[in-house]
Image 1 (cartoon, rainbow, N blue to C red):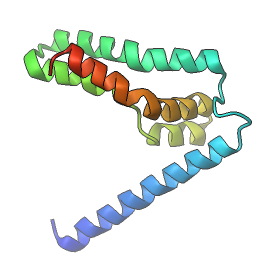
Image 2 (cartoon, rainbow, N blue to C red; image 1 turned 90 degrees about the horizontal axis):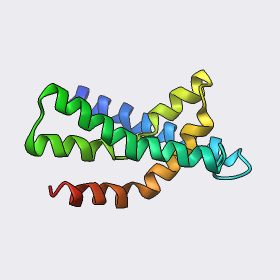
Image 3 (cartoon, one colour; image 1 turned 180 degrees about the horizontal axis):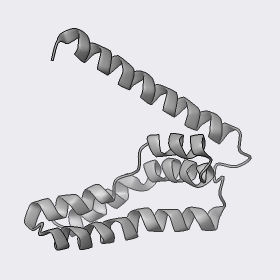
Length: 124
């Protein structure tokens, strides 16, 4: 790829990530508490993300024939935190941005211990 195109794409991606992070920060700052959707909903969202997500990945990987190291890696990847971009789309289309903002913040905080637990449980 020509260097000018490569640098332009890099500039756009860096700017987009910065704007998404800024948008998440503004949204969180406008809320009265860091858990914008309530404690119960936060626990449900984290349970779905870190328990149901890897389980669903295991079922779908088994059905498509993944085995071995690739299978275990797919499960660990399902336990990684979600990015900021889904929050931006949720806020743009007004589809539960409070739940996603809480999910992004808490997902980043608790993802490392949970991903390490899956990593050691699956013996990667």
